[in-house]
Image (cartoon, rainbow, N blue to C red; front, side, top):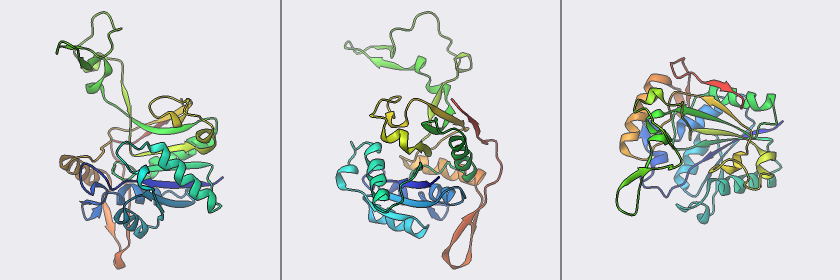
Amino acid sequence: MKINALLTGRGNNSLKDKNILDVLGHPVLYYPATACKKCNLLNNFYCSSDDDAILSESKNIGYESIKRPIELAAPNAQHIDCIIHALNVMKEKNDFPDILVVALANNVTIKSEWVTDCIKMMKDDMSISAVVPIYEDNDHHPLRAKIIDENGRLQMYDDRVSGNISTNRQDLTPCYFLSHNFWVLNVEKLIHSNGEGQQPWSFMGDNIGYYIIDESIDIHTQSDLLLAEYWIKNNIPLEQKCGGGYSYKVVSSAAAGKAVAA
């Protein structure tokens, strides 16, 4: 069974060069890229980007470059399009995988053992269409969500909900959100999904396994960089080798993941 990693990141962002901004002496993308590199279940490593600086930084970590067409790097481009493009490149190289680990370049909250656990989960049951990390966030529960109506007044986001709802988040049914750190995808099921899976990430299919983590930090603002730095300091002590190479060791933390098949 062939298992490849695909690091994805585009250069056209609201926070300029966010994927290669410095965090504790390394570009942001170093952390997801290195976490995947430390997973011994992965065969080959690719980076898809329209940005030469991103491709250069990832190449330094051992990722083969896939230059993404400009139309697949536009703000309205869909993630699935760059994934399919990368899979076609791998196919041309006779390196088409059974499982693809997609790591997002702007999220540092990733550990190699999480990647390993999620891959093992899929290998044990290839009926699973995807395995994804999730985190609980009742602060942003859908029962708390509002819309603005035509009269400029707040209304419930889902007007089908009736009855009393507690204002205490602890009283609400646990609500989980998809983490944008990495996704483990069953390539055969992805190719034949025809966009019929769970929205909005329909390419993940309908038989999705989940892996619970404590939090996920997508970097979109300067303040996110500070949160990322704090998380790294408390979860991933860095060790710099001589000669410009890098490695790290992962230590245990309260944010240990738990894998569950759904």
